[in-house]
Image (cartoon, rainbow, N blue to C red; front, side, top):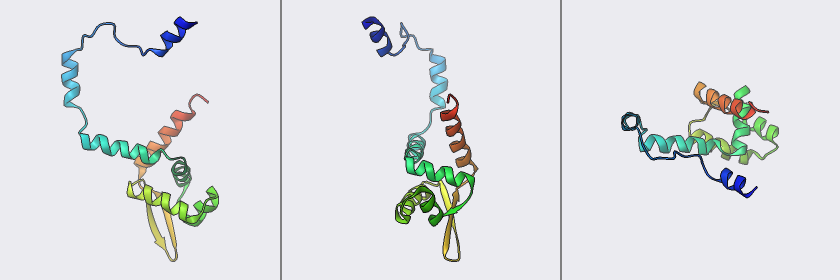
Length: 126
């Protein structure tokens, strides 16, 4: 039992250190810039909030106003507005005004695909 616990607590690694220098060189040429890595991390961090996930899921179906989202998620309009501002500042949602109402939708198809693939991944073994 103890041996099994020890075995499971250690990551699988190569038994010898022998990197393929050609592969490493090729991969280094394709490495993302620090700014792109930072921006991508910020995108996933922004999407990593449960309330924002609920908002994105709702907006995946159709555009909604703050009042609709507030009622749907049983949250105050100010709390919803705050989360929408974070999503908007990170280019995940956009808005349009119609009279006295403001309607939000996903910023573009990339967001729909990204969210949809993430959801598929989470649900694939359920």
